[in-house]
Length: 435
Image (tube, rainbow, N blue to C red; front, top):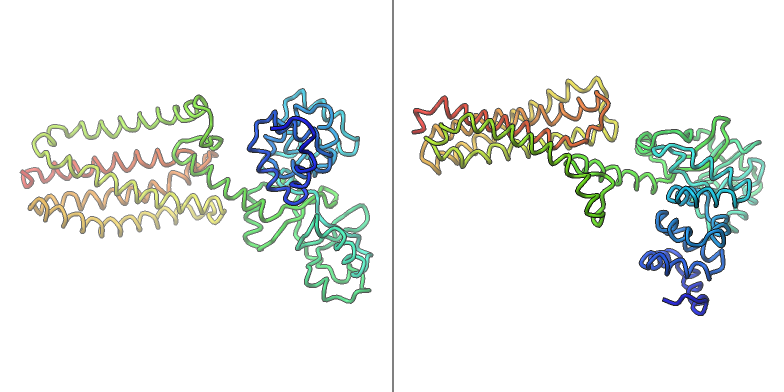
């Protein structure tokens, strides 16, 4: 990789044609090589490329370019991306670069850095289109054309004195309006805005209910400070679902496929110990009936069938409840009704699956009582699975814990213990018929 400026014109041309692909190519390099390339680029081209680079990588690259050209590049980048990069800087780099920024940009970045992680202020973009309410439709369309290549948008916001949000312009309404009409007469006044400290889950819920493409963010005085786009909310929803999937089975939401080995071990090991304890609990249930299993060895063949069906049914119930909690479809007063519904579902499924399993065991082993035992155990375990699948996440939510936090481990414990105990207990009851 060249570390001089000989390739600069070609790289700049690449960025001008497709800055996003250029950013992907840059991220494929070592940080030292990427820094060498950025150092020789014009500040505008460097900023255009880094605008699409992941904040963590951008921070690593810029830390090697202190104080210049890092400071000049940060002045050119969008404020929200600069704030994301600043969160990945070392303390020394963050302090040095903040002091090097212009006072207005420094204040803007510090304000963005002050918002909590799970808030609209952290998620919003500040490079939006907003026009003063007294402008005419002709003036707005003319100004929009001049910035269309940089900031195309379906929504354009209308502000009044002191940049206070007063309305939103829909492109269709704007194009159909009289060209000399003030945009104040064309805008929609019933605009829904949120404060910057609004929780991101609430944003997703609001966008889902109202079908918004973006949601404006205003401060305490009603001043427009940014907007959260639907694509960013969708990205958050996918991230949240992935984190819940990790938490559900005891993995860390921060873990990535190529995370360091030590990181993977330290994050997974505690929950593996919890799982080990619960496994010993299930094994102790089997140990209570070891003499019975010794006399009727075929029982060991059916133990995993009962436990496995209960685990699958419980995961189905758990998934439905977790989705309802994430989307806020479930209110506290709904908990009892939901649990009863899942118990009922488990009962019906248990009877149907129990009949199929019981008949299969009868035909296979030629003993109808073996079919009765496994069929009854299946009913009991699927009812327990429905109860646990609904009650565990609801109880964790009520107690203030993340409802996805390793619910799968606790659910598996319930279905294993109940499945083993019910099957072996019924076998003990019908022992004389099974010999």
